[in-house]
Length: 257
Length: 356
Ligand SMILES: Nc1ncnc2c1ncn2[C@@H]1O[C@H](COP(=O)(O)OP(=O)(O)O)[C@@H](O)[C@H]1O
Ligand SMILES: [Mg+2]
Image (cartoon, rainbow over the protein chains, first blue to last red):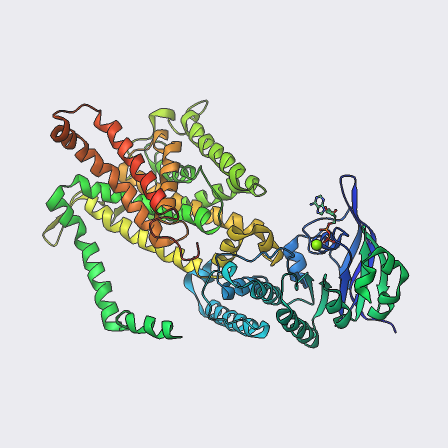
């Protein structure tokens, strides 16, 4: 079956000094799917995210979102184009409350400038009320209490992960890239996260998911790609991946079965 | 939930509009008669000291946008104060024979200083932390050295001598630095400038609070908290940093202009590194990021050294039976000790931002 590709990565290569972190990576992420990216530690998954979100520039290769070439653009323009992310090591705005973190996510979709901020004319007030309400519903959506005022870094770990997802969703992305969102979660939290990801997909947002929890990935993803030492060694439906001898050999064979 | 109800009960009086208005009126009346009380009780020089405290307040609020909100450590901030002061001095003094009215020079000073903010901010965009501090420190010194040397080949600034006979702000032909009789009450220049500066400071406070609680303020604070995450959330960090530099510099520019017109004289000596550090201390001591904390820090640091000046001789005489230590040095020693003490006891400032 031919997929409708929303994010396509072509020949992306990245070296750090002598180390080739990624070599000639090609990926095609279909519209509306959950696309899993797995591989042992150091395989280059996070590096690929950093390239896709403009933090690193690739040595070679391009990638485009809905046909728009994004390689080499500044991070904020990539977010504007519709690709948002979370971080493997949580990076919230620590001293802000949860709600304020989400409100920052709306920055790219709002316009208020100095005049609007200082004089709070009608349009600025309307925009602010609007984004505050939307931020509150996003907090609800991921299962957090919007009224919490404590600094976000003092929230429980699982909540911080979900807050990062809410903040990324606030940028109104076409594709959301999640870097190990289940890391450090207990089984109940992981089950909740799973439900959340299913809901996000149902609401029409494509998910690119790096995850170590193989069971979660195999149960949830429509397509899975496997990286090993910076190379893509397999791509396909979860059951194909599970049966792929290269994957079993290169990567934790035991865990896949 | 129980906590919340309790909280509301406890502060119900703050929500009663009558009590709120009564509070505001009391504050307003106090501020209005303050210079008279001060003059009657401790003398007119203290009204001038209060005026300078208000000027420092504007500077500290401007620097707070850069350091407190956006988290960009700027050690050369006084340069914008200098730019504002010299802009006024050149446009309203015999130096070039220009005598523009204040309502024209204030916006010009605002824009010129803001422009310098962008000019000095742009090369530092990639720098973080210590490196940024070193470069801004250098910029501050460069501006001062320029002012010191721009008396040749063409004389622009009069060099180290400075510019004298600067026009005061005047309204309808009345110079505000002269004593005026209004409704039978004598208002000295220091009194009149007090009201002017108070209005300007309140306007600065208003602008800062509005900015902080807006899309822009949130973006600045996001950059302060985690620059990479801020970028990854779609914030154009370059533009937001330049905006912070420009806004902060504009406040400094207006403060500098009013300072020049009040003092009637400017020279490069007023814009040394120590002044940058002093303003930074006001921001840090009061509570970086919190507008009211910054105002409190400014009042304390602008007034405390003057109090120490007055009491360091009498205290020595009564304790040691004579003046043994130069009062000027002793004053700075005590001042330094006070700063260290406050920072040890309250490391995030006297009145920290709740977001810190
Ligand atoms: N900024 C960097 N500088 C040097 N090496 C890096 C950098 N970022 C990642 N690497 C290296 O690239 C390789 C891939 O890392 P990473 O993408 O984090 O792996 P993964 O997320 O798959 O665990 C690792 O060997 C890592 O040490
Ligand atoms: Mg990783």
